[in-house]
Image (tube, rainbow, N blue to C red; front, top):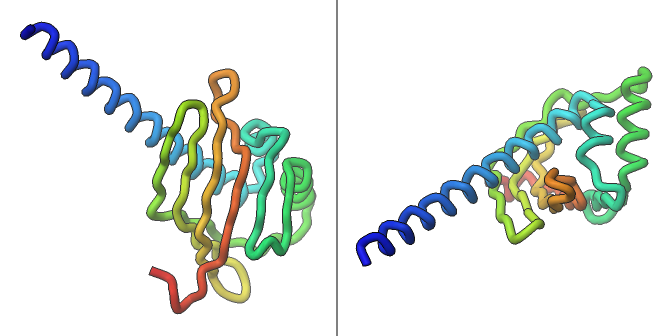
Length: 147
C-alpha cells in the first residue's frame, strides 16, 4: 500500500510538473509570435502558422489568414513602412486540453498615434509534435478600461 501511495504521488507530481512546463513553453512560443510580428520574421511566421490560420482583428474590422500575415511581413521586409515600435504582452495564461491549447492575455502595441492595449486569445493545435497557431482573436481595450 505504501508503494502504491508513493507511486500515485510521484505520478501526480510528474504530471503537474509536465503540464506546467508545457504551459510555460506555450507562453514562450506566444512571446516569440509577438516578436516575429514586430520584426516581420517571415520564416518564423511560415513555420508557426497553420495553413488554416484565422486572425480576427478588433471588432472583426479585418480577418486575415496565413497568406495575408506572411505577405504583410514580406512587404515590411521589402521596405514598406511599419510604425510599430514595440509589442509587450502581460498576464498571459495557457490552458491545454489534449492537443489543443489556448493562450490569452494582453498586448500593448506601441504605434502612432498612441499605444493601444489589446486583449488576445490564441488557439494552438499540436500537429505532428509541434504547436501551430490556428486562431488569433484580438480586441482593443478602451483606455478607461485598461487594468
